[in-house]
Amino acid sequence: MNQKNRVSLFDKCSQFTLANDARNAGLYPFFNPISKSAGSKVYINGNEMLMLGSNNYLGLANDPRLAQAALEAASRYGTSCSGSRFMNGTLDMHEELEHRLATFVHKEAALCFTTGYQTNLGAISALLQKGDHVIVDKYDHASIMDGIFLAQGMFNKINLHRYKHNDLVDLEKVLKKIPLGENKLVIIDGVFSMEGDIAHLSAIRTLCDTYNAALYLDEAHGLGVIGETGRGTGEHYGNQFDLADLVMCTFSKSFGSIGGFVAGDADIIDYIKHVARPLIFSASMPPANIASAMKALDIIEEDNHLVQALQKNASLLREGFSSFGFNIGTSETAIVPLVIGDNDKTFMLWKSVFEKGVYVNPVVSPAVPPSRSLLRTSCMAVHTSDEISYAIEIIAKEARKLDIIG
Image 1: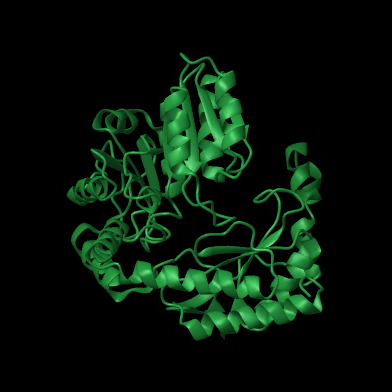
Image 2: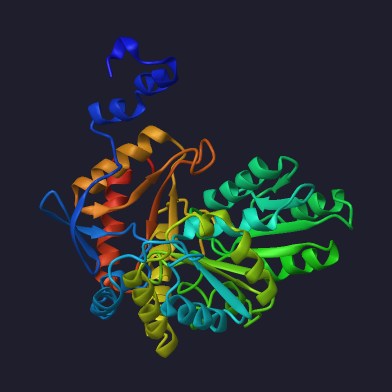
């Protein structure tokens, strides 16, 4: 379209210069194409790099057993279901995986969506109606917020309340203000995706019971990561699998695939199945992804050595960064933020570390609050202790040059 004839709707696009400014300064960190991935290494522009920024916590995305399962499923069912779950898009594999996932998280039933994002979008928007109250931690994932926004768009009068991160006193203040008889849903991440800390699940359940609220738990970064056998936040708090009314998780982290599920009482899941717009109007999870997620579940259930290796590496990562004086916030898991607080220094540290062959993720607002920019590091079960030590030393050396640490 001729630039002179473009309607003003598109003016915002030509006026958006942040990305090009970063590209011109050599500080643009996003959309780097990976040409190959193997274990703890990735290849970018022909260069081997140590991956210290992936959510592939158990290393299963590169596991040949998952690749073989995906290949066999594609050979049997094809590459796509070519329809929604309502129509021609439900396979026997979907239902088998759902049954097994429900058992895994100690719930009656489960429902799979095509992505983890769609799981939160669909389940949350299905559950909330006009006049309902939804209470969220300020650090909850964007997909949780988007599920609420979809409900607000459909029903208008959804009452959104936000409380300070992991602050039980503030949560109780919010709950106290809502009439006891009105519908309330508290939504939390089990493990917070940028901070790497764990929600106070037991105490939150107590508050929910006191103030007549339901509890929805996002385990995207919890399953496969915490708990003795990787069963997440409930196991972390002493095998208390009944603490949350609903449990959600994605397959794109520990399960080495893509997709997601929500699990809970059978009648709740059946309701979501028939109401959630992202399920009704999206093509279903493809056969290869179902098979790879199911094979990952096999591996996690059979042996917890990968979970234990991940937790050992996570301790090494946290202790190593702390020993150099980095601010790692309240991290307790395999996610270890290096809080810098200055956007320019965050991007400069990312670039210098990237050039030294270590891949980490720079994170700035709106993904984190303003003035809390950080490098998000995360380890995998397949990292060696030498690789973790090497990465820490590289990052510390470059951080000193920028006066980020002493």
